[in-house]
Image (cartoon, rainbow, N blue to C red; front, top):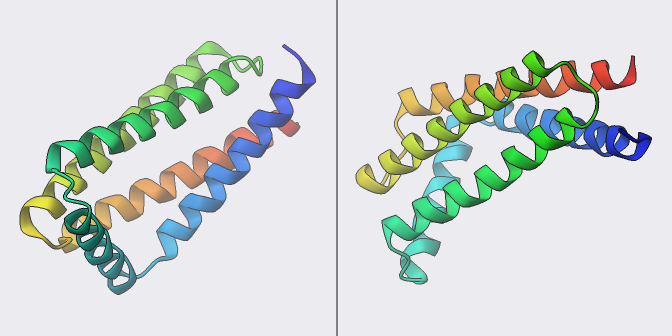
Length: 136
């Protein structure tokens, strides 16, 4: 497509990589505190569990579709676009599963923390790979 799409996809890949690196290096204590703050904000705003899940799924889906479309229009081979879509779908499911667990138990389990941590690592690697693919 155009160079603009490639440049935007490159920036999105770098942002994806940076955000997920920060998620990967965060400690359990920090993430647990963020979960507690999130639960308190949800309580203060009288948000239902269904509303929280819906907003999480909607926001994550929009960002995932946007990134996938950018990669698609950057002239990346279609099977790699399918890998991106599959990986982002897995991330979406993991995010929803962790949110359900936090809303149900009112705390973040160590197991879900580790699953999220390694999912973030894979997303960071994916962002790096596509950033390099777009540059080279």
